[in-house]
Image (cartoon, rainbow, N blue to C red; front, side, top):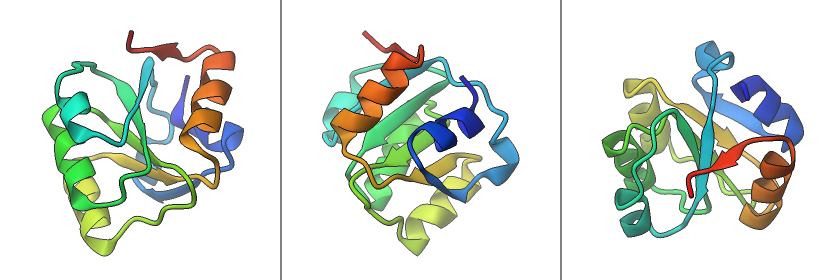
Length: 114
């Protein structure tokens, strides 16, 4: 599934990484606990989270996560945006809950990490 497809499905706003909107995403993982993200290796995936702070970007970078969706109308900070740009990440904001986003993406064929 391409990032641009995800944007349309979850009514997301692309905060940074517009140039990567044709990036192919294979898997998704949802968590607000970055310690869980650190123990769940997945490449070419998307992280769905409500944790809107720089730690989510740093954690995603460590795990080679290319795309982050901020759920529940959370807004990215300027520091988050700068870090995401520095790491060639796509950063999205969605008005929906983590549960809703996960369900929509799963029902449209995106695979879970496990």
